[in-house]
Length: 511
Image (tube, rainbow, N blue to C red; front, top):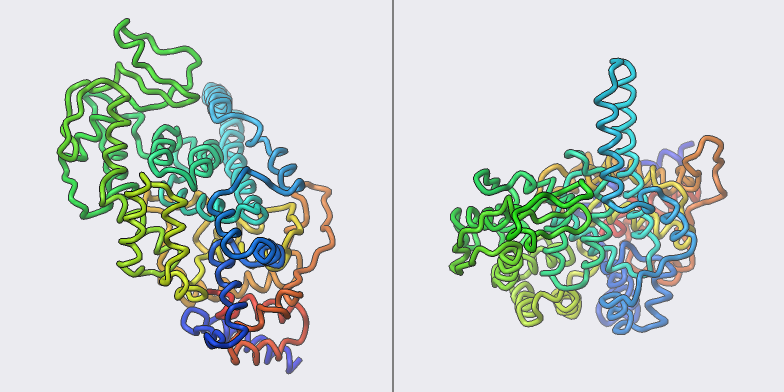
C-alpha cells in the first residue's frame, strides 16, 4: 500500500511537470541520437509513433518514407477499419440524401398536431442528427489511428481546423462527415486553390458562415470576411473593408438547394446556373455589377467571378505567408522561425500553392530537425498517440471513449464554435487543470481497455485487450529519450497498469 502511494505521487509529479520539463535527448555524437531523431521524426509526421510505423519507416528508409507520406498513392485502410467505416449509415448516403431525408423528418415532426408526439418526433430528429456527427467522428478517428497515410490524416485535421465549421449550427451535424471527407481530406495534400474552392462549394461552410443568405440587395459579409481574415491572407495583411464588401458581392448567389428540380430562371440566366449536390450558384440571386477586388476589376458574369477571386487570393504573397506560418506553428513551434516561414512561402508561390511541396520544404529544414521532440502535444495528438502506442494495429470497435476524452480536454471533433478553429499554441493546453485531466485519461488508457473494444450494442462484451506500451519498441528505442527523473518514476511503478500510466503522463510523451 505504501509503495502504491509512492507510485501515485510520482505520476502526479510527472503530469504537473509535463508542460515545462524538457526531455534529455542523447548528445548529438551519441550512437543513440539517430535512433531518437528517427523516433521524433515519425512521431512528428504521424498521429503518434508505434511499432508498425517504425517498421514501415525502417523498411523504406527516411526519404522514401517521407515521400510516401507526402504523396500517398491511394486511400488504403486495414480491412477491419474499412469494414467499420463502410458499415456506418453516414458513409452510405450522400450529403444531398442525408439533408433531404432529415429535412423531411423535420417537417413531419413540426407538423405533428399532438404536443407530446411532436416533442418526441423533434427529439428523435435532433438525436438522429447527433448520431450522424458521432458516426462521422468515428470514421475520422479510425482513419487517424490506423491509416498508413498518416500525414494525410494529420493534414485533414489541420485543414478542418483551418476551415472550421461547428457541428451544432443548423443541420451541420449531418454534413460534417461529408465536409471532412470530400472537401478536406480529398485535397489535404493537393493544391491550396482546390482545397479553398472545395470548402467554398460545400453546404457545411455555406451554411456555417451564412452565405446562403447572401444575395443581391441583401448582402451578408460573414463568409467574405472569414475567407480573407482566416482562410487566406490573414489579419493585417493589407486588405480593406471595401475588399470584404466587394468579395461579398462576388459571392452573392452561392448557396444551397435541397430541391431536386432547378429553380425557375429567365432564359438568359439558365446557362449560368451551377448545381452540384446541395451546392447551388443561383444567378437570380447574384449581383452582376462589376467589382474592384484587391485592386483588380472583376467583370460581373456569374460564378466565374468567384473562381477569379479565389485565384487572386491564392496568388497573394500574404496568403502564402499566412498558410505557411500556420503550418509551421502546427509542426514546429508556437512562434515559428521567420526564415522557415519565408522559405515555405516561397515554395507556396513557386508551386502555385502545392501543399505537399510546402511541407517538403518544412520537413527538410534545419529548423524542423531542431524542433523534433520539443513540440507540446495538443489534446487530439496526445490521445491518439497514446492509443496508437498502446494498441498499434489492434483495431478499436468503439470510438465513444475517445470522443469523450477529447471533449473533456476541450478539443472535441467538430466542436469549436467560432471560425478561427482550435488554438495551436501550447499555452492553450498546458494549464495545471488540463494536465490533471490528461493524467486521468492516461490512467484509463494505461490500466485497461477502457471500453475501446466493447461494441456500442446492448449485448456487447469486452474483447480481450490490454495496452502494451512497455514493448519491443520501448526496449529498442523509446527508453533512450527518457530523462533521469522519468526513469526514476517508472522504476517505482508497482504494476504494468501503473507503469503505463506513468509513461503516458511523462514529459517526454507529452512532447
